[in-house]
Length: 461
Ligand code: ARG
Image (cartoon, rainbow, N blue to C red; front, side):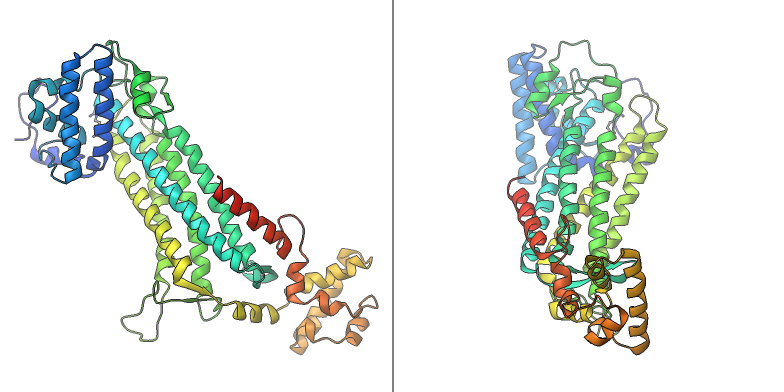
């Protein structure tokens, strides 16, 4: 029969299937290092406040340190009957140090304990994720530096619109990931609050020092309301939302890599490092990596939704529903970590840009049509009039199966006498991109500046 650690109020034993149903040890064991850190701080505080004698606090501290060493050595075996990680630690502690170990849980509840563990865990994970984001941004910046004057068609509605610098395109993603990096920093501030000392829901009559525990654990401040502190999971929602946005960005980039690797685009080729084959079609080379990143994004959006639904009907304060916050969180952390790593490798060594092919694509379309209109605008013709005229010119070209650069000066002049010899330079794709020097635009000189700014904030965030 499963033991009942809670109290002697029960006579009968718990149904074994219900014990399994109730248990979280199968997944919350991940919180072990953080649970130990929380307990070490708690016991130090209990000693400092005279709630435990210095000897008692020291005995417990040694026991917890020994468990920490067992964890590091990989020899820690959680008690199979322990319901969760908190009991697993307490059971082991009592086994190691005896009766005094039973004093660890003085002035504390698993409710404030688990909230503390989660925040410590997440704070660490956020730091790791931010490092990965920073590395991926570094790869984007490196590639951008190589491709300032590489031009390719820019799209709206997935129709060729105006040519842009490839660096400008890459820097658009760096911009998104920079926002993500900052956003995670703000989420970290919400996470970095200490709920320990809130007790089960109402605080404790013992003379604890919450500031001390918070300080020992590196928390920025302590929570204000005990009822809120044990049932608040806002910081998890914020983290899931921030993770979801990162994956929106990675997924959009992935979609472009899938498109660009297609025979229809050929803007990138896949190297063998990141591509896979078909079990049936011998010629295939598939972009599984960006497809998987795109696909995995959906899981994380699901965890965000699941968490919101779990929280929305909960009365104050702690409810066991909250145990369900963990598996989604762990999966989000793992999924996001693996996607960031895979994306970094993909950009570093999984794809090769094809500038030649991009340039060809730009040459075969009408993405310089706006520049003909702008040419006329500079000669005093109202934009709307110019727009109408260029529309007619494009229609004529389409009918003849030619593009704008195939028209000679005589024909240009037939369309409008304001056209001069310099129209040919004005519609040259390289020139078309170079000319867009408005702030934030794709003109090479502007992109070069934008890259410098992005590099500066990457080096000194
Ligand atoms: N395993 C529990 C959880 O993850 C720990 C808190 C249990 N508290 C309680 N009152 N049953 O939420």
